[in-house]
Length: 514
Image (cartoon, rainbow, N blue to C red):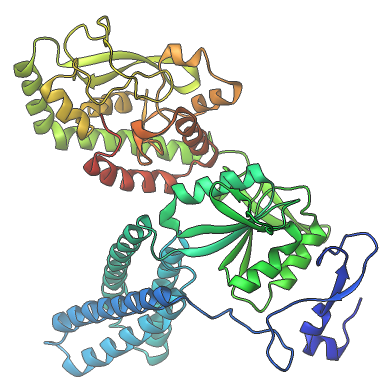
């Protein structure tokens, strides 16, 4: 159907009337028409909140912008000091051009919607650097000036590094506030109760993302009556057909749609139209919730968007690069840490009788059993001795206790900072393990594995992984397995780099290490 020129100029009128029977359901039987209830001004047009930011978001955006301006100033000032003695006037001109190019390119990276969470913030920062470099390069060509190379290849990267550091610091401060329940983004979720419980648990567990589900809508619930129903302490405020109305009434930042047979293509389309002109964006959680990143591709086929899932990368050039990086990194770390390894070995010999290393059989890539090395942290013969009346605080089949008397004095310190795992660098060097990967299980663990859990063996086990940076021994068995499977499904070199970066913080915080 072609739109008239009047309809193209006033698209809001297309949404003033929608089929209705039981709210704004476009698929309900006996459909008549009803006016869409909307937050409207006196002239009847929808009130736009799309550019509105919460007070804390405005403050955070101001801090980020101020930090970027300061970083740009410091980098340009450094370049000016170095270059000024030879050509002072030209240096001042180049400094001004560089600062202007950087600040213009950085404006899109100040969008409050991408600050403080996800990788998009840093992607935009990278694009800003490239944009500024292109602007300066074109300017140099247009003006016939060749002396801008130093500003492009030295000053711009320096500014980018400073911007990255200040944004990282601000993000960590924001995450600390979010852990205390502040600076959160209000979200309303709608879908099947079980899917909603999973979403609520995920948002609470990943509080640093800032998403806080404050209300839910689910089939058959009205949210009215003497006692409002709740799902995991989150109030049910209405049926699935009430989502748009509730979102407009309470100005939620996002409507999160979870799995439910109610959500057909037409209903989701109508919901997206009803949310237009508000501050609320619609987010749809796919059924395959643990598959993301480079494996997910959206393409249009037969006039409709399709979500394509590519196979996980388990062979090929990228895996070869990972193997080379693993062995090179392990060799370098062994060389750099050799004095520390010798000190630890000597300490173990002095602390208690027995061997320096503890050898244990573990299951690795493709089910291959190998011998994993660790520094000995328990008294000799601890495997054969009883743990007595100690409570098992470990996840699944692994016995863990915070106060295990079999652990030596030095062993407790080594475990706290994961120093007992450093000999596994030898396992990485010989190819039995990787720097990053799933936790290597014991042979007896695998006997009780469900079929899907065997996917952990599709990649080499790692010294660290998602389980290491997400709580280690404090995780439940199901959560540990889920994280390992998520790594296998979404493996990439970028993910490995992120896990290695977070491992340093996890080790220093000693969270879940005992």
